[in-house]
Structures are given as C-alpha cells and as structure tokens.
Length: 562
Image: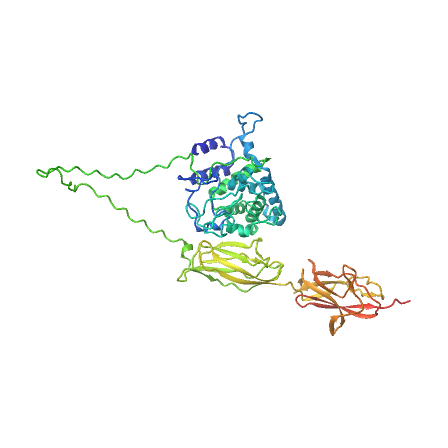
C-alpha cells in the first residue's frame, strides 16, 4: 500500500494540495494487526483510539475508507470493448445514490439556503463512509439490500459506546455500531434522522433518508459550506480525524471536476480502510533482550556429576518488569456532577429567541471546575418545535477553563407550552440537569383600524367595506397574534348578538363569532365580509387578541334615504 500511494504521488505531483495532504495524513494513520468482518472491512488496529466522546460525532469516530481518487490523468484500461479509464470508473456514482445526494442538497437549499451545501460533499462522505452504499447495492426505494455495519464500538481501537437503541438499528444490544450508507451511530440517528423519500419512516439504511440526515447534520448551527473553515468543522464533527477530513476533501474536489451516473450495483468498491495496513512497510520489531546461558558446572571429584549445578555468580539475573505507570484520568473521568451556572428563567414568546441561555458547570466531587469536557444539551418534548440557533435540537459544547458550558441560544417555535432542556456529560454515565422552558403565545396590546371610513349598510344588504385592523405590541408590529371577532349585544354585554350584522361560514350560514383568526406578517387582520339582516340600528363588533388588546367597532344599519 505504501508503494501504491508513492506511485500515485509521483504521477500526481501537479494535483491539488488538498489531495497531497490527504495522502500524507493517510499514511501516518496506518497501523498493523487487522481482522476482517463479514462485510470485508477490517476491524482492529485503527489509528489512535478516539476518546470516549466518539458518541458526539455522526459516526462515533468509526472506521472509514481511505482510498483516494485518481491523481493522474485518466488512461484507458486494457479491456475488451469500449475503453473506460480508471478515472471514469471512479467518477461514476450509482444512479439511486446520486439521485439521493442531489435531492438532499436541493432540499437543504430551500430549508437552509445559507448552508450552501454542495451535493458533491454528500457524495464525498458517502464514498468514504460506505463506498457509495457498497457500489450502489440498493433497491428501487434506496434501501440497502443488507445492513452496512461499522465495527463494534467497544473501545478496542475505537470509541467505547454502550448500546443506546437496544439493538434496533445495529442488532447489537451491548455496544453501538455505525449503521447504513452514511454510517450514523444509533444515538446520533435518534435526533438527526430524516425521512428523505417520503415513506413516513426514518431509516438509516435508506440512502435518501441517510443523505438528507447527513445534510442537516453538516448544516447545523448555521454552518456555511462556502466558508472553508466552517466546512472543515462540519466534516470533523462527522468523524473527528484530520486524515478523514483530508480524504473527504480530496473526493469533494474530484467530484466537483465531473462525475456521471452508473447503474446501481456497478460502482467502484474501495479496498482500503482507516485501520488497514495491507501493503504498508512493516514496523521494525525490536530484538528481544537476550538471556545469558548459564555456564555448565564442573563436577567436583567424588560427586559423580549427579548433583545440580551451582549458580554461577557471574550470571546476571533477569530484571523484573516494572509495573506500568497508571494512566491519568481524562478530564471527563474526573467529573462527578453538573451544577447550574446562573441560568435565568427560560421564557419567550412564540417565534422569538430566548433572552437567557442554559449554562452548566462540570465539577469534581470536591467541587473543583473541570475544563475541556463535552456537555450535550438536548431539547426534550414531542409537543415543542423549539430549537437551538441553526434549527437543531441537540448541541454539544466544550467547557471552558472555568468548567462552564453555555448552550446556543434557544429559539421558540410556534407551539406554545412547556418543554425541557437537558444537559448531560458526553462519555460519562451520571445524572444530568433539566431546565424547564416556556413558550408563551404571541401578544398584542393595541388594535387600531386601518381606515376611518364609516361602516354602514341597508337592511338585507352587505357592508361595502371589510373591517381591517392592525395589531402592535410595545409599538412594534404584532404578527401571527391569535384573535377573535364577535358581534356583541352592547358595550356592557359582550355576549353574542342574535340579530343585526353577521358573517357567513363556508356553507353560507349565519355566524356572529369568528375564532382562530391570526394577524399576518404586518400585524394586519382583515375580517370577512359583513352582511345585514332586516334589523336596523347601531351594532357593535368586538375584536380581542392574545395579550389583552381590544377594539370595538360600530356598525350602522339604516334604510336608504330618498
């Protein structure tokens, strides 16, 4: 493998610096001692084992393919029939897989246009994670014919991640494994999973679901893929390895130069893994310490040579191996508990950003702050659409030198009510902290008519002008505020009137109370047409909004003057 990469480097001296960096990083990451699982991928001897925070990445810092794109000019292969260059073969992406990448990127361009996600980045990650779903071995709906599973994440060369899904996704009820064509670990898929093919399910083994989930994962926290540093950060959050980053960037640049569709199941399969050492130069084995042979004893006269030889004082004794030095605990292992770090009351109006942020501090048993610890903040509750800035419900923050981690700002959705923000230490089994948060309805404190035209009508006719009002709150536009409109009996009696003006419902029936009204983006509410029965006189229409704003409008019904 070392000679193989060396040849490619010599031929590709004029290629991008990114690809060269990937080769260098890749060569440094190889290690001996591999075994092969039932998917033909090696399972031990990876680059230095990740720390326990591997469950904070999409893949758990699992194994990945290290094959690089061709660095030389394509040359026809000596095969019968139409020549196909190695470059052409590598550039081919299976039809369904390619379609999934493009549809995911198109979806993100609408939901998160500021992310500027190129579909080629999804293709690069898909190549490195699963070889484009093992060369496109997927059915018509995009689901792999058999599960694609990463190695068991039991700490043997990889992160140690205990089971989080009872084996539902990965079939392992003891430890987690990365799953599917984009290699999500179950704990990440639980919140990052998406339904990309519209079948009502979120299946990590489906390339449409997995590609859309990967896109949203990369675009978290308003990351912009057109900014290289932000793209790099997103890729490293997928698998925290510099070699991984460089390999993905190499394929990204390769796919950007051109690619094409190939039939499902005919894609080029990778042959090297991040824990594969095939072809690499063997590491020198240090010689074992030699033990001097004991000198033969010379039989003393009369002993017949049958006694055991006496120890030779000149023979050195084999020194005993000193016990290994204890490994110092990681910062995460020293954490005993979480403490609140001055979080205020978490309340916001629907659609607004919370003024307060959740902040916690990691401490030892003695109360000493611990820095460089990952803290995960999770929004809990099915009845809320609140998110962190960037639209995600999970955020991970590393504690600073004072042991404090502050979550990104919370953004209230349109659903009102209570939800919970839970803080936990990544890689540590211990009690977390729960914070109650409340989303209150949008409010208005003032209502005014947008016109001063008198509202008049003849008996049995319809009002020429529709009632239109504008809502404000503290002088600002009050958009999306709930309101009701009722034709009342009098200024002192707000019960619904039984005569005079009325609205019509969809069936043309008389209605004198309207509910579920909402102001528009400009705070404006325009009521339906009003009609009059045979009663004459002055009538009242009362409009109320959430927050206490009230406006009473006069309606006059009188016979036409001659």
